[in-house]
Length: 359
Image (cartoon, rainbow, N blue to C red; front, top):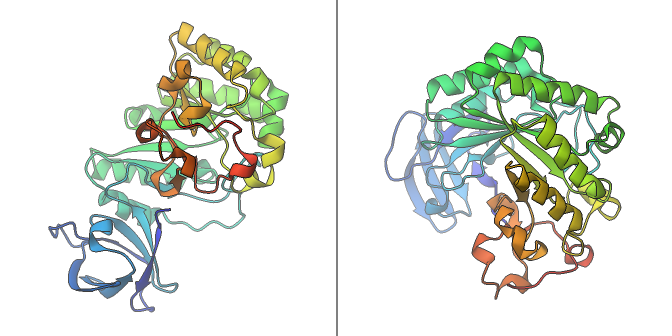
């Protein structure tokens, strides 16, 4: 598992700050310079003063953008220069309680937008940065202002924003249209049955609000990625959901069908919710076939290739972020490993997929 937190040493009296680690060339005032190196210890100099990072090689963090917490002596790797999987956690607050949520909500919120803006300005050229939660749009004014500033500073940046779709308003229309070419909205929809969708997200009336706001995103011309986590609760209705999407949401860029992540509420509700696609792909296959017949994009996220029948494997993508991805010992001889999503770090073989076979 790739560490996202680094052991850091600096003056504890400093305020939190953002700094970029050099990648061979010092680029500006927010870049540090390496002044000393020995096994297990790297020493840098920056505008804020000298600091030290332990237990990491300089080439492993070259170009990374760090958010430093001097009080805790920790550096968070906000942006890893060599990774396409960089996400800013906007908030841990949320107004839904999804059965399989991997990031259970908290009541406390800490505003990090100034640090996120500093980091976005230092991101590698052409970066797409994820914005996640919790529910980012609970802090919509601050979020929109941050995006305005980041996109104005960097014409090459774009954002992939995960939201439950509950908080758009008609006044947002001009803003959404202004940035529609640089924002991708990832919005979950779990069933075409309002009662079942509301049960899964733990919020009465959520489907009704979502339906109107999805149409609103279509009116805005926004790029939309619909997301559906497949579970025991909704697996039997995937074909009906595919029909609903193709008829009512044809403007969606793609529909991502996702396997569960065994962490957070997903771990607590695993036996209740996990659907083993390796044992039964019938409904998934029918839903994909319907979307293909209507020439709409559909993808499979978090599905190991061997859990997907060969006829549908072209839809399975390497979606698991590299920092939390792993492969099982059984994967070692597999000839498809290089293009397989693999497994989440916290996946457990004892109660997971029945059929895991090297290809």
